[in-house]
Picture 1 (tube, rainbow, N blue to C red):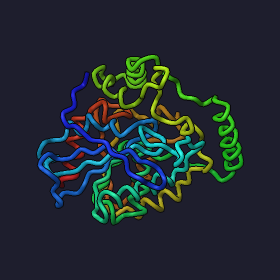
Picture 2: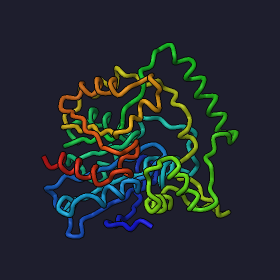
Picture 3: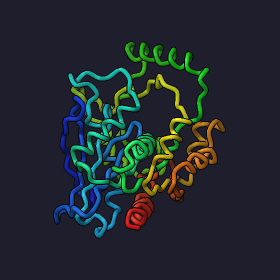
Picture 4: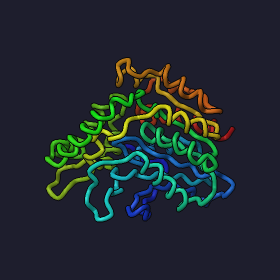
Length: 312
């Protein structure tokens, strides 16, 4: 089993009617107010603990005096989705921006932070940094590519698909698979990511899933996250927000081309790089021998890269 180098503590914070679970790595020597907090936001069907391997790979000098904050997004990990405890039946992307805004109010007040986001969290981080530019000192986007461009004429079909999938959820057709043991969860993680070692998969499985009353291990992500967004992805709006980002930005990619795998030519790295040109101070870096979960595949490479960027 993977052994943590740096232990975190969990706490629950009231955010917009939800009990938000947040993981904190704090310096044993106390917090140095001159150091910006490091905020880590995870991706779709992931959890805050996913950053443990990268946090462990950061140098002692970098971590000294610094607070690292990582929330479980609503409906993921230990954060619920409804104030009464009942699950939501769909999610709106703008809620992630507002949740992050309230979380920063709670933890840092008006202090600027260094913000790192992976995948869906990278997309949230990019938009947030454009909407609240004064709150972000430096920005790191880990494979948060956005989505292919849409056309207005797709809207009627998209709304219909959204409503149909809401009904599928109510019929139980979108339920997430349960596993007989935590070892089964670990095998599932390694099947999805062949680079994930058995020790890390075993550790992560215990944070990615929990046993229910019957002993079945349930993934800590609500099935409603599988529902297609009712709203189209509007590239022109995203680029308008990108143009408002003032923080120096590091866009990190894995050497494996995730976009080619996912979109089969409908959206490419070249198109993504064109979009990044709208960010005033953006540069691209590549992590070698890594796939989309690059913070699992090469945490040491990634930690060194991020540390150097944040300390420039």
